[in-house]
Structure formats: C-alpha cells, structure tokens
Image (cartoon, rainbow, N blue to C red; front, side, top):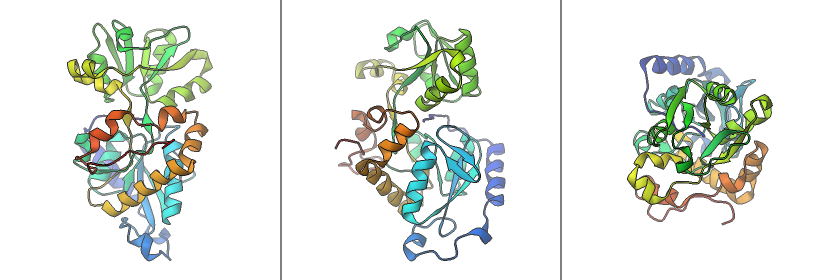
Length: 310
C-alpha cells in the first residue's frame, strides 16, 4: 500500500499518462446533469473524477471499466456520496504520480504512502488505511524483529522504500525484483528468506499459490532508538496511505477526506478491509507517529488521524 515507491518519473511515463488521459477524456460521456455542489468540487470534468491507477490486485484492478479492489471500493463509495462518476486511466506507478502532479487526472489511489516529499508536489487525503509492516515468509520460519533479519536474503520490488531498509540491515542481502511475482517465486524456491510487500498482496498470494507454502507475518516495529541510529529503519514501521491529488484540488481533497473519515465511524471501512482479508485492528489504527508526521506539515497542529474504536 500498499506501495511506498520511488518518485522517479520518466519522459516515457509522462507520455504514457498524457496519451491515456487524452484517450479517456470522454467529453461526450460526461454527466449531463451535475449538481452545483458536485460541480464546485472542481474536478477536471464536472461530475467525473479521473483516476490514475496501476493494476495492483487486490488494491486496484480495472475490470469492465470499473476499479475493483480495496482502494477501488473505497473510492467508489466516496464518489457515490459526492455525486461523481469514476473514470479510470491505467498507467504505472510513476505515471500515477506524474498524472497528479501535472494535473492530468483528479486523483490517484492504490496504497500510495504519505511522505513529506510527496506532499510538497500534491495533496494527500486523510488515510483510508494504514499499512502494517508485513513479511512473506516460508511456512515453518518465524521472524519477528529487525535483529532476526540480520544476514538473511531479503526481497522486495525495485523502487519500494523497503529497499533502503533492507540495505541497512547488517549482513542482509537485497534481492530486488520488477514485480511481486519475482519475490514470491524466489521465496518459494528458497532463494529468498523474507519478502517485504504490501500485506494484502501476501494474503492473496497465500490463497492463489498454496504450492509456495508461505505465510504472512508482521514485523515488530523498530524502536525510536533503532530508527535514530538507522533512519532507513523507519520504513519497517507502519505507514499511512492516502489518496493523492493535485496541489490545486483543495476542495476535492477536503470532500474526499471527510467521506473517508465517515467510513471509519460508520463501519464501512472495517467491512471493506475484512472483505479483502485484512485485519481492521492492523489496518485501521494509526501508530503514534502518524499524527506527529503531518501536524504542521499538511495538517493543522491539532489534527487527529482517523481510527476505529474512537
């Protein structure tokens, strides 16, 4: 979410999102009767919310012109409440960020992690969920702390910030792959001891590829002292995701955030997390540093992140 990936944006990616956006603008298909309240949200096309996504089941997948998956279901719920028609535009992760930062789309979703750097170039909603530090491990193996990872073969996807964390583990060897499939293949073959991936990806792989004999474990987050000694260990802690919007889309961001917060309160968010195999206690309760990270940055000093059981 839950992806935490690099900010690099290539010219090819920019061209990709430009082409997809042009093909998907669909002026003739735009809603004809849009309320003043919906129009005031300021989307690129009144009544339509253009969404850049990458195929990343079970978070985002486009089927029959609709986005399905955890993030897709959350956005669909929000869009319905706001009177918006969802229009997906498929790209890669760099294209998702580029589309937002150049305002070719209204929003991007799919486990995008909040960071101080990314928020300088766009707006983040309140967190639709929080991503616990999940590990894919072979059955019969148990790893609980960062110290347990020392000297192991650790895998993740190229560009994910877990790359930096893994490189900071004493004696550990990084195995970086183009996608999650490579991580799972080598984990099953014994070439990798632990795979760091988004938790719902691991849970889905357990069901879809039982022959791999893998299980999901959650890393005990490193202490503040450990993070101070090795700052890259911060990525071994739970992190907050967000829907990401252009800098000028302030009204839309506030409206989407308000709906996300309401979904925590009315139980809808917990139901969607459970639908995709997640544990609401893991996904919907923020760590202590979530609030402090954003207060005074892109949230007021008294901001309280959404949580179940408040």
